[in-house]
Length: 230
Image (tube, rainbow, N blue to C red):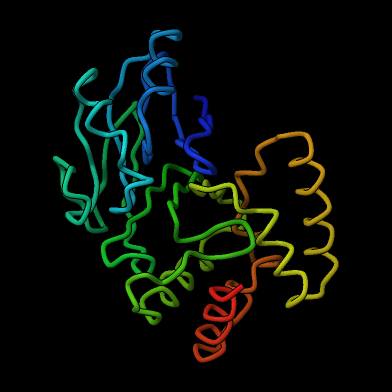
């Protein structure tokens, strides 16, 4: 099995899970490059997984499905999912099981998909940050992050954006630990070479992500709003 990022828009990643030329696509923000890749590689689309409703995550769905019909799993808020999920469901694709996890906060209906130790998290968690709370429900986001923090350290986290460098440049001023400083240097080198910085891991995020370090709800809200202003 291969898990590949396809860069899209300005800083998105469309995650492609491939097994024996069959693929599952996560958050297709646009379709053209994806359709070109499928034609070149001979991939067959088995399913689409959507994490939430924002246009930079669902923008390519209609064109993709028009060319390659397949079930679309996602929360009702997306408006394009053919199979509605809320969290707690189990999706069978590529001979694997994808567990749906409710991760509200960034949006009301945001979900993530976990396949073995691979977590496709959309905009809930980034390397060294978390998503903005567009829902206004900070408590929901705080609880979602607590659930993620409780996962095994080895779980790989596939975020939907390349925000790692700018996140770490802010986090290093809050955490001031060697792990964050070292990760900033690693990511800086990768970005200078144009290399993808993801996936991260839950274990790493417990060291370099303030939002997985902060245990106090009021401090979480204060710091999330401070990051929003920066």
